[in-house]
Image 1 (tube, rainbow, N blue to C red):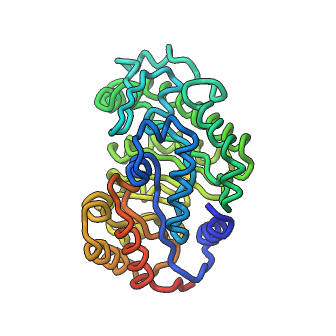
Image 2: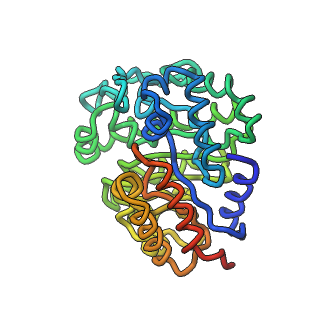
Length: 349
């Protein structure tokens, strides 16, 4: 993000007016390689292509906030790789990590990763270090430390079904696994900030938190995410959960979260009531069915619907209800920005 974009984002967090309605998207490897015209593997393997693709996006759409911006990642393989997961990469589809334990009781045998040396993490840091000067020369800075969340990572390490069953059948072992992963996530965020002092924000992505009830959320989600969102003292504490998000929305204050991207299945008004007036909402049109597969008119109508769901347009970044999906064309991004300017009221404080 540019200095001015970052300044305005912090103003939103502080409850101050920025004088316009911002539009922004979470962008990473599901969208960028296809949009830029390269394979997924080339995007991951080539620092040069990674940089060119990201620079092309921010140059094409200078008024869009791309979050987190210049995200160095290897899809869902990123964090599991540090624990030793076997990684499967394909030219035209996103990579996936193979599970490495069959039973939650095996969590005790998992090594505690060294975030400086293990898995793909050194390559991610190296990519940013090698390209940081060029990123800065183009007016941007590395602003966010990023990680998947503890439940999300646990599901990669042992399988979603197996992990969800473990929460019910072996809570003690589940806590041991979640503590180990939380230690890792805090180490990983801290190492990113140590390497790049311009980092002032944390972005955590965890859809699995949307699959548990209130009691389970309080036991297995709140203590771990609260610790993660507190470990850096970040000014911007951004949570992505585009699964079921009503429980999450009501817990954001407990989690120490002040920015939330959520499912398009939830109305802006409903999430605002649950989250409170101070949390910056990031949403909320359907990513695949409208932003990727819809017409420009569909995009405009979806933005209009979202805008009309809120009486007060303070503390909003108009976006998709989830990350930028594959296949989104320039014309729909342009239509989205135009619709935000047309239907988004000026911020009233």
